[in-house]
Length: 93
View 1 (cartoon, rainbow, N blue to C red):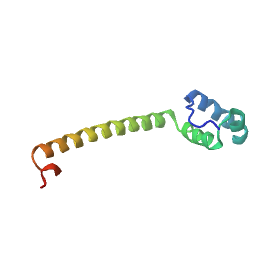
View 2: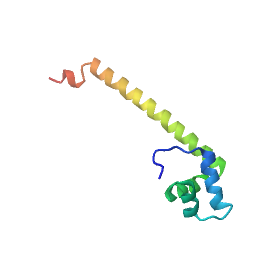
View 3: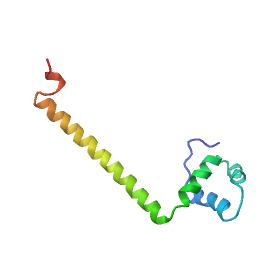
């Protein structure tokens, strides 16, 4: 199968439509397109959600990424301040 290849949302939606709207078997579509049945089932679950739900999930993922960046920055600042005030491991002797 095509490991590491990124497919566009349009490709994924077209593949799912062959199963959902046209009634083809997942295994048949997967074989014809050269993808795994696991990928196709994943895409089917992903695109069966309403556009509003997909948008909310994307927004939540973006917020999680932003919060992780902020946490990393604050943690780094705290570490710098600890070391500067003599409370860090360098001054533990």
